[in-house]
Length: 88
Image (cartoon, rainbow, N blue to C red; front, side, top):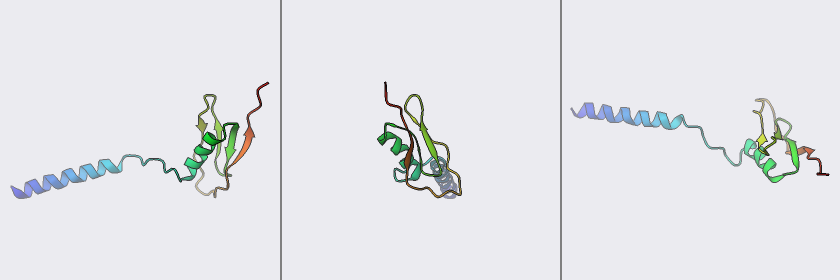
């Protein structure tokens, strides 16, 4: 009886551990992607920016649109490649 309880307890622990591993990790604020997203938040007049690997642009609602980065790219310093036109 004690062995059955031990087996059930171990199975429960394995299930809890497996479900915790399936959750996506939160975005690290120090990661390159977070920096690219943060650049768009800081530079409101910039509508397109790049790090040489990824190019982000600003959607009509103001949210940044950043595609996935290529696997063999070495990012450089982030710079604005297109500013918004001044209102007339």
